[in-house]
Length: 157
Image 1 (spheres, rainbow, N blue to C red):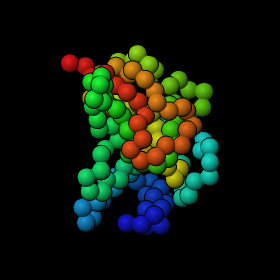
Image 2 (image 1 turned 90 degrees about the vertical axis):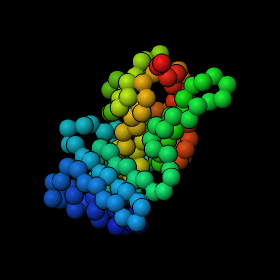
Image 3 (image 1 turned 135 degrees about the horizontal axis):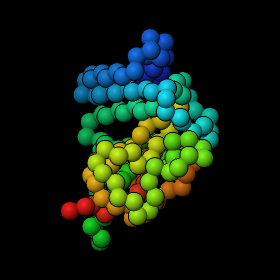
């Protein structure tokens, strides 16, 4: 599925007021969820496509890691939360809102850790494992690359 097809799909979902959609095609999966109640931070740079009301979109193709697949660091036993996409990192749901997590916070599996904005889509990055946030590796509003480390997490035993 190309970018134009995805953008047309998003526009159709908004027009038809569909809150959640999932499609699997040729081993690729795209899931789109939206919620108008969730405030989203404004983009810092122009982005292509529409639908700022979309809260989360995930795209998996082949064996790509999911948003927070823990990758153990060799020296310390910490887990690295990485970016599943290229975009802009936000540590709060809206400008001036409290951050999702702070250093030292204990998080549980499924808890939102941050948002990566890509093409005006706000992708919630969730913890796949509980633990304690040890370090933030990026700053609010910073551009991030696919696979770039975002946070370090000490897993709870």
